[in-house]
View 1 (cartoon, helix red, strand yellow):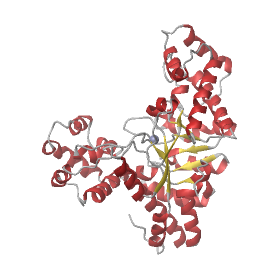
View 2 (cartoon, helix red, strand yellow; view 1 turned 60 degrees about the vertical axis):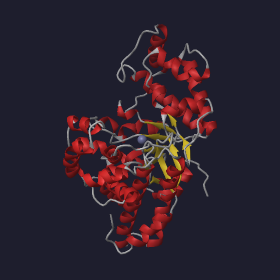
View 3 (cartoon, protein in one colour; view 1 turned 45 degrees about the vertical axis):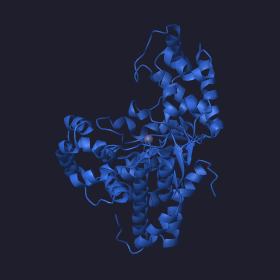
View 4 (tube, helix red, strand yellow; view 1 turned 135 degrees about the vertical axis):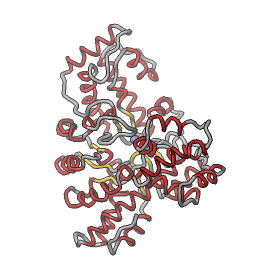
Length: 429
Ligand SMILES: [Zn+2]
């Protein structure tokens, strides 16, 4: 992408020099080692656009790596032709060009890259791509890493700091889940008070390990509208689970009085531990989910009550930009995080970066988060697109004399580096 404003090139070049804070990543280990060209090109989010442009049946064929490239190519080609202009497809195009030297997606190109697919399980290769992307630090969140973090054996992936996962702690539906969640402490839970104490101990251990935030992605499964039930209501549900280890309640509906109460308790812990809370809002990975439940506006009461908790609201709340702009403008404890959004919809982000500048304090914006599991090649492409989006937006604003080019550079630096550095207390120079 290229902006048309006069100062675009200067601003884009400047953005390239800014070290990035990757506000959201899932790389608990280096990887993957790609073995199949079609998988290597559609892995991660682009699979959802391919799915949206084809069918469940076609996806099953594309994922069947026992079939040859030639057998799967007609289906891949047909879907590619229907979805080759989305933000995710931009990632695929850039990966194809940068890492394999291919300008176009063809069967011949797939055959050529077959023998030189990236091995990202090699830490040196993985890290060299992050270096190339000029990513300074990544905030890494992965539930699967939790037990190793708790017993001190987790090995951080290059440039990462950990973020504590919240959802399983409030999504509890039975006795076994409760006991398993606190098992690393070697204790047996019998009451709500004991459970809350145990959760706090587990969070403290992760903070000791270096955690810089909490993260909640429960909007994939439940509404973000957390109510404020009484302790007695929550305890009644909890005690029912405790009194019969064979009993299980349904998630999310039957869990809600307990889950909502616990979420508020965890917000109090976040405040006391002085850790910000990252929350998934807006669009969800995959296809066929319900967007209404994920609109950040559902968090209004949480944000308003927990004034000493710093909220980092994810994915620019795509597609509800107006609602998140309002929340950020209206509440001092809300920041907008553009992680993932830059590739969900580059033009949404370009427009929103302009609107952000004219409507909310620019010191409350976090401009980049890769949001991949491994796949440093995609994190690199994503970083390029985020820089493009910011340079396009800011150069347009310079063109209309909203601000001058030096001010635009300061804003770009804040969005890509200094705001997140301060917000997450990363203490980078
Ligand atoms: Zn994520």
